[in-house]
Length: 116
Length: 109
Image (cartoon, rainbow over all chains, first blue to last red):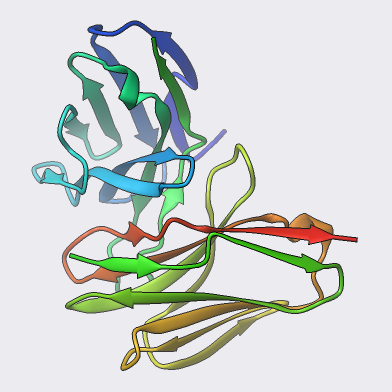
C-alpha cells in the first residue's frame, strides 16, 4: 500500500460542480501539501499545513480551499470548478526538518482532474 | 518570493554526462532539492544541498553555491531510463518548497 494515498485518481466533472480531492498518509508526518502540475508550468503550491491547526496559502490558492481533518488527512476542495482548474494534483507530506531529516517531500500518485 | 530558473529541455546520448543548471533568488534560503519525475508519475527525491559544495550519490551529483544562487545536477553514464523531468526546488525557512518549471531530459541511443 502507498504511504501517501490520493482519491480519486481520476475525475471528470463539469463547470460549477464542487469537487473534493482527498489525501491520507501513513508516514506519520506533520506536514502536508497540495500542488498542481500543468504542462510547462511545473509544480505550483496551492496550500500547505505544518500541523493539524495550521493552514497556509501557497502561490495559487484562489478558487481552492483545504481542510486538515487529522494529522493523516488533508483534503483539497474546489467549490465551483472551472475549466482552467483542469490539471494533475499532487498531495505530498514531509517530516519536520532537523534531526537527520532534510524535510524532503513524499508525493502521492496524483489525481487527474478534468473540468469540462 | 522566489524565482527559480532552469532550462526547459535538454538532450543527450547514452553513456554521456549531462549537467542541468538551476538558478534561484530567495531570502531565508534553507536548502535546495532535486527531484526526478517520469511522465505520468509522481516526483521522487534525488538530492538535497544546504551547504556549499558537491553531494555525490552514485551516478548523480548535485552542487550548490549559495553566494551565486546556483545549483546543478550532474548525471553520469546516462541510461535510457534517465529520460525524465528534473525539478529544482528551493526551501525558505518556515515555508513550503517552491519548484522551478522543470527540465525535460531526453536520452537517445
